[in-house]
Length: 381
Image 1: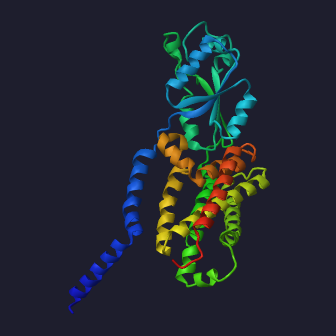
Image 2 (image 1 turned 135 degrees about the vertical axis):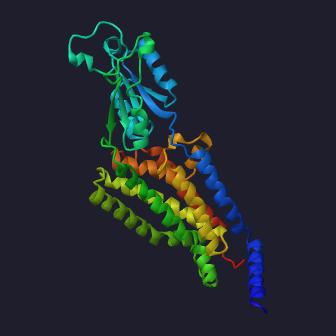
């Protein structure tokens, strides 16, 4: 047989094998398709509709008009209203909102005296001249969110009085909490914990059942009295310690090399990390009961890893995504853990502050473990 004939024989053999492996063929089509859709539609660096809280201490027609003008920019969206600054700060801490717009009780006087409006008699002192009209309190741990709201700092208010603006003084004061220097490492390092754990935990356990089948150990498991749920729990326990070790390495080196703060709630951080590790491991076990080979398990892991990186808020702000992409992101454990770990590490939030994400993670872990145990059958077929 000539070399070309032998090569052709191998070529047709691989095509036939690929045609029989429908899951692999599907991944060949779906992975580039999903990435194209994510990058084309879901990923958007032009942030819009950032959820904010409003604290209107003035309660006048002018304050309401000012809030409407800020919302008209489409950069922010008012989702909460509070009567005190402390309530707004608590909402930022628990990630219910990303910023708070504070309108002081002397707003009308400040607008009249502000150079940004070009209205009224100039104030008598430089201190009065430099006073901003209102204040933004921003979650500075996300540099993109902080940059978008800082763009509103010099928002002109001359349209209120049809006067030419004077831009010598910012219209709004912007206070950045948790990361006033806007260092990227402060935002990246805690988020990297979620990405690394997603990658390793799902990859380790997605091949757990398949590996037993390929190595011929399934016959031995069938003949033992171990129950499916016991097998699932026994499979994930060793990887829990691996996940905790990885978390300690990332956060420890982040603190030593990049001076990333570690917060003051180690037990909350430990509990949240354990929940995420459990949710990721249970998801990997579900994949392991679906895959027939370790190659298929790896392909499904990659299929989940791509949206976990792009939609969780690790690289691109969650608020910049369309609604459909946000729904998909909410179904991923990485999205909830991204909020939790940044809250624990950067904002000194606790489990009670992040209770929505905590409850979702608990439910996902229990459901994933139950589904994996239900799908696992102690038989060779």
